[in-house]
Length: 326
Ligand SMILES: Cc1cc2nc3c(=O)[nH]c(=O)nc-3n(C[C@H](O)[C@H](O)[C@H](O)COP(=O)(O)OP(=O)(O)OC[C@H]3O[C@@H](n4cnc5c(N)ncnc54)[C@H](O)[C@@H]3O)c2cc1C
Image (cartoon, rainbow, N blue to C red; front, top):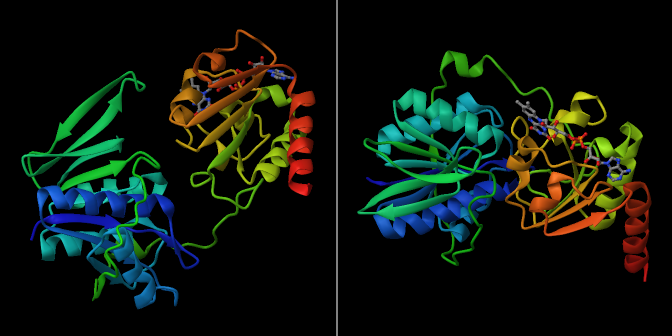
């Protein structure tokens, strides 16, 4: 059988938005190359009900493989996906990106001796095969990558694939028995950490308020947190402030941090270094507040405000709260 297998990550009874984007993308692509659009769901909890798994049909999956194995760690998922691909012969595995997607995709590539493309921003169907498009050279050019052998592993850039409800109803749910490799059980999840600043996952947040060294000190982040709360978003940070211990690494955006693409990225006291830019330049709207009118961030902002963030952020927060209150 040919087709595309995706991995659907879930947490507390809900699928991750990025994974749903991959499921939707896989469903769209099999219409062009043929075969089945399927998804793998892994977990040990009671939340993996038939109903929940079958709901991936609403995003276009026709079959869902459910495996009882530890979730949130890469190697058990690699074991499951390698077995399903080996038994059923899927031609491609598609991931929505994010740290776990990268790790599973890389592990699956090594296990199956496949070909892999990471940071993919678009997938095209050509002559019955998939071609992955990815930016290179710090996003100054794009290349088309095709696969000479199966399976082809495609790992999207975070939020590269849109979530689309196909209206095709529920998927068939199939339980898979997988014997985990010894090394896959040597790590276990002890605890999931919560993001400081907002109860929203930074990679899923539609609005991010990002702070840089211009905040002056760790306490300066309270201004970002206040505004993020008023906007219903999350807080992000530059490497300079993470290195200084002002904010956790989990919030770092950029070359050595996360890549995000929210609807709104509000950058306060951030100069706009290239290493920061590569992690946020795909945001739909970029608003920058900086007291230096020559700051590089203004070169790629949709709206630039030249001024002191200590005055602007509290006023903005106050105005938004007054609007909500009114
Ligand atoms: C290999 C490598 C990897 C890196 N990876 C990353 C990465 O992943 N992410 C990342 O972010 N960086 C990364 N960096 C660091 C990057 O080069 C920059 O040093 C960093 O992004 C700068 O952070 P910043 O904008 O907070 O600080 P600064 O560059 O110091 O900018 C502070 C800005 O705040 C403004 N400002 C000051 N006071 C105020 C005020 N009161 N009101 C308004 N504006 C004010 C200033 O005008 C200035 O523009 C990396 C560097 C290297 C070499």
